[in-house]
Amino acid sequence: MSLLRPDFGGRRSDVPPALAQAHGCISRGVAGLSLRQLKRVYSGFIPLPWILATMLLANGALDSKESLTYYPTTVESRYNMPGIVRGTRRLIVRSWRDGQKIERLAVDFDDYDRFRPGDAVSVSVKRGALGIPWYFGVYRR
Image 1 (cartoon, rainbow, N blue to C red):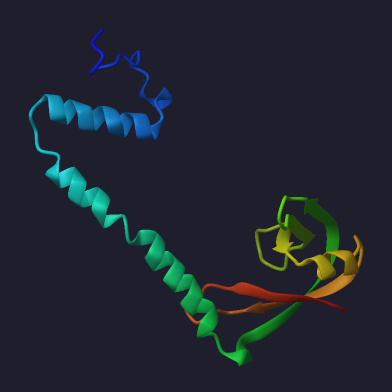
Image 2 (image 1 turned 180 degrees about the horizontal axis):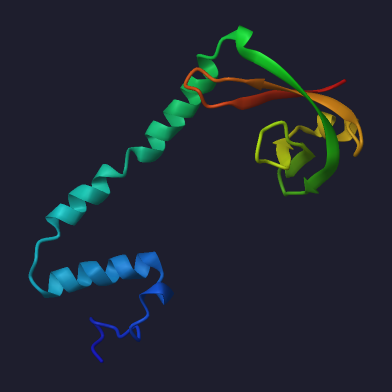
């Protein structure tokens, strides 16, 4: 068995994707093939996170005030994961969307302490300028 061509036992599903990519690059390099095309493809992925972040920012920033919709629901439970800095607090409510059973809503410390399981709440949802819905707030009914 060669160090440059490891034997995976014929089971490609057991190979992690990053290891498979590295193996492909090494194989191309050993065979004397150019890595220029792969370099261009991977460098094309560099702006992708920035494009997605800009889209999400524009979706919320350009949203109109009139697109606010209120959905009545009930708090099923709460989830608190303490962290070193802030932690994560979520209210788990019955979903208002078809095909979903629950929604996990990230809330701040005040909202987490204000609501208890069984409370009737209204969740305000904005449509989003780009059509990506996002929840705006949780209010007591």
